[in-house]
Length: 162
Image 1 (spheres, rainbow, N blue to C red):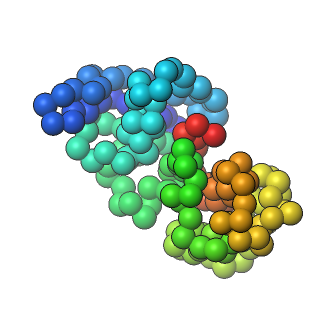
Image 2 (cartoon, one colour; image 1 turned 90 degrees about the vertical axis):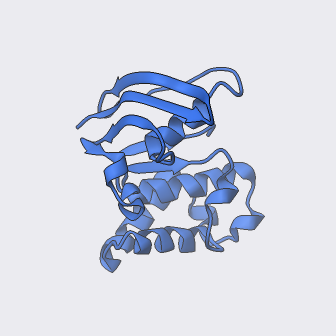
């Protein structure tokens, strides 16, 4: 399966932010995008996640054109950890957030239990999985958000300043 950007361009008004970007990522690879603040790292990740419908070109994730997928199916292909994890939560506890997300992806209930426990164990949030999210530190909140993405089993995992 391939993840790539093909002839991708993005403009804000009449200002071209990205012009004819072509890049391909190897499956099961770890890629690090570095650069000074404000250079467009978050914008690049958001393009990969399909958050900019107005781009020119194609974003392909796991051999699927991301813009051809409805928003509710995109999460099966792309998991995104935002810079500020507070913007990702809808529920009160980590456990509730995990279950809620998987229910919205229409994962069968018996599989939800299995995925939730697997993600909690993998990320290491056992000690605070039932704590109120708003009582957690910033790093703990990022771990909760990451556990949700792990449970989703997305093909592509994007971490914006983890």
